[in-house]
Image 1 (spheres, one colour):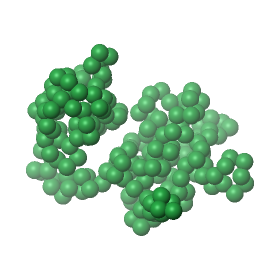
Image 2 (spheres, helix red, strand yellow; image 1 turned 135 degrees about the horizontal axis):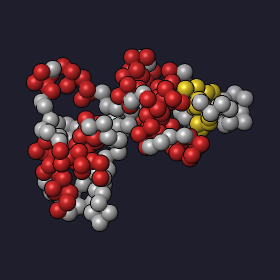
Image 3 (cartoon, rainbow, N blue to C red; image 1 turned 90 degrees about the horizontal axis):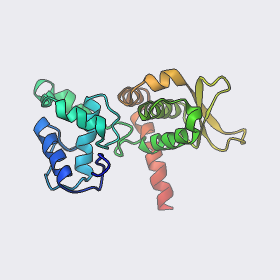
Image 4 (cartoon, rainbow, N blue to C red; image 1 turned 120 degrees about the horizontal axis):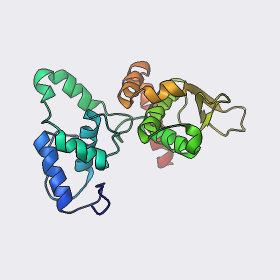
Length: 218
């Protein structure tokens, strides 16, 4: 941890200490299992770090940096939510965020993130969290508008809105969805995920994944 940051695929005593701290605070992997303290930063440790970051209003990038370590140092043990509301805990465990690979629309979310990154300063995002929240909002609005992928994201002329575009920008037949930029950066990933679940029937929500699988089979 020469740079003061721990991320996936790193290993060593600093990772062991991180795993021990997460266990002590009650943070587990996505299946609810305590972390092994083997000093290897793998998927299970990544999931626990992301859960901790979400609970402490940090960007859930899974990278343990200065802000995450500061929060870890002062954090109190996690309350066992399932003891008070088992149905809520079970529901949340079955419903991953758009940023999680297990979500059916994760591929579109990643497309939105990549397209927003290409905007650079023109995107107007003050930090990574705003960009990721805008990507979540774009994914929601594009999905309910019938788009199956996001090839481009372009700002409107006024600079206060963003278009998600499916197809070539010079193709009159391209499809697009519009979001208000200020509203988009304020809508959390949890809210976008919940709205998508409410607004999009399950069968349609699964369609992009089926299309991807079909294309891979061909």
